[in-house]
Length: 509
Image 1 (cartoon, rainbow, N blue to C red):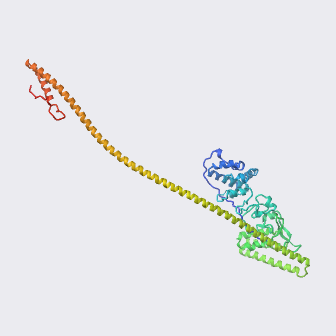
Image 2: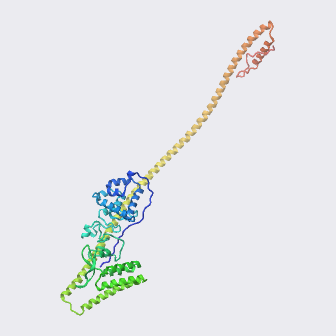
Image 3: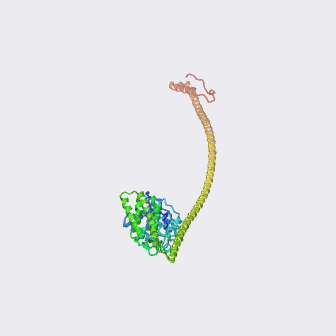
C-alpha cells in the first residue's frame, strides 16, 4: 500500500490585532451580521469609506468568534452568521467581484469557518477567494487545488461542496497538518484519505477477506467510503513505520503505536493479534523509560519477523499437498492482478504527481507573467516619474531665472529710488533756501515800507516842531522826537547792502 505523502495545512492563527479606532458615525458603522445579510455592493460602498482601523476591528471580532473561547454564545453567533450567509442566493462569482477585499475575506471565513483568511500575513488574490467561496478551489491554503481534485467523478467529490480528496477526510471533510502518520488511512485504489479515528468510529476498519492470501483467510482491512473497496492494513502500517519511524520523536512514536493498537484492537488473525500485543508492550516499556530509538528498532524488527513468519507459514501449509491446476491458475491470476493493481496505483500516483507538478509549473508561469507585467508597469511608471522630475527641474530653473530677473530689477529699482531720493532731498533743501530768501526779502520790504512811513511821520513832526520852536516848544515833546530819530537812524540797511538814501544826519535837539 502506498504511504501517505500529503502537503496540506490548516493556517489558523491566534494573533488578535490591536489598533486605535477613529470615531465613525453610527450611520456608517457596519456589523458582521450586516456583512452576512446585506447586498454585496451596498456593503462594499460603505467599507470603502471606512478607515483601516474599523475594518481591522471587524476582522478581529470575527477571529475571536472563530476561536470559540467565549463559549456557547460565540458558537451561536457563528451559526447565525453562517445561516444568514447560506440562505442567500445572490452570492455568486459575478456579484462577489464587486466586493471589498476585507468584505470578501470575512465572507469566506464565515462560509468555511477558517480564520486564516483574516490573518494579515495570508494574502490570496481576489479570484482565489471567490473560487474558494463558490467551492471551485480547495479551502486548504496549503493545497489550493481546483475542485474536484484530479477530476474525480466519485459521489463524494461530485456531491460534497468544497471537498478535496487530496487533503480532506472522506468522512468529516476536515484537513490538518499531519503527514507521514498512521492518523490518516489512504485507499489503495481511489487514493482518497480518511482519518483513522473517523474510520474506527464508523466501523470502516474491520475483519475482512485477505487481499493477498488465499481464499478463506481474513485480516484487518479498511473499507473506503468513497469507492466501497477494501485495502489491507498490516502492509500499510509496516510501510509507514519503515519510512517514517526513524524520524519520529518520542511523543510521536508513542502516538503512532497508540493508533496501531486501536486499529488492530479487534483483529482475529494471528499477525494482527501479535502486532496489537507488541504495540501495547512497547508503549508500556516506553512509559517505564525505554528509549525511543530502542523501541523503534524493536518494532521494525518485529515487522521483519512477521514477514518471515508469513512466508514460512505459506510454505508449511502448501508443502505437503499438491495444488490443483485451477487453484494454481487462480493464485497466478491473483498475483498478476496484484501486480497490475500496484502498477496502476503507481501510475496513478505518478500521474497525480505529474498533474500537480504541471499545475505548479503553470502557476509559476502565470506568476512570472504577472511579475513581468508588474516590472513593465514599474518601468513605465519610472519613466513617467523621470519625465515629471525633468519637467519639475525645468520649471524650477525657469522660476529661478525669473527670480534672478526680478531680483535684478529690484536692485535697479532700489538704486533708482535712492537716486530720486537724493534729488528730492537736494530739491527740498534748495526750495527751503529759496523760501527762506523770499520770506526774508518780503520781511525786508515790509520793514522798508514801515521805515518810510515812520520817516514821513518824522518829517511831519519836524515840520510841526519847527513851527512850534518858533513859538517855543515843550521839553517832553523834544525828548520824544529825539528817541524816534534814534530808532530811525539805528534801523537795519537794505538787503543789497546799500545805505539808505533817505538817511538823514542825526542832529541834536
